[in-house]
Image: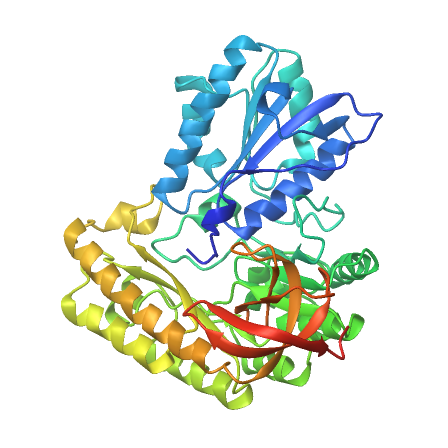
Length: 481
């Protein structure tokens, strides 16, 4: 759950400007976190060179791909229903091929291919460059599978196609995999060991995005603070690096500085952070550069030291408070959001109260809160009994959500009366006469359109707010425009 899952984006099909030379149609749907949506862009880029244009009409597709997520049971159930739908279409179009990509691929490959026979192809997150060979296999009537996890694949040499983008914000992948064996999480088993991408390839992608008109990027990884480039290889092997490799290595704070210096007018965000890996030099880099947004997504998962230990989170409640204190000291206006799991095995009422008291201490700007859902293949599923009754989970989750809503309103109120820089992303969902955008703290703001346009940096006087939205009026362009 170390990843933000935007419910409004689930199941989005991707579309791209067509190449007249391409004769085949690709329909690709994405589920899960930002990492999966970023991976779909990489897949579309690889297949564009193999003669595929994207389509948003399922009935028009030669190849249907679904990029899957194993984080929550709901996501898996949704994907299964979609595969049933795809196979219903396939009965009338027998030449259409269906493939599963991403995090469900490795765990369910035999079910999908052999037992249920619902797909032609299963491709893991590190095998996308093998897609041309796998597609040739299914074109010739054979099932195809590649779920081998790589120790070095970062897709740093694939320029992602930007699909369904607002033309303003883009994701830039900097790491793949994860070494943190949190007991509730399946990511290390579905995405493999942690490796970082060459900083030069990251800078080239960022510079290219700026040249194409993008104004904001999010550096993306399962655990961005763990970024470490020393010429290639797994992070866990860094102690075997040469003295020269160690001396010239780049950590996450160093990468942040390189990107901030490369494009001083481009907004920089990052996700997701892990409390055990976030170091003081990252916070210092954020404080130093105006274009690094004052926002940190800092999942805590529980406020109880006993539960944190059971989750194999390598930080304590007290260490988390120290990190929060350092952030607030160096960046007083920094917004912080959380991930929280309630109802983890053996959680008591005292543990739950510890979570509520931690939330009172931090007063998060917003959060992503879930009742514990046992995921197959995780350490918790293998070693712990899911022993908290559903009604108890629901009650505790309701209490957490109520407290978060109270804190969200408290935080948005602090912006009222201020004039803040907003990057316009598009038209407000509730009014065609208003723009919506975000401030540095990632809070949504809406204001009358007037003569401004998408992609403008605008100073907005905040007049009122809800618990999630700032409401104001533009008072001119910002100096960043």
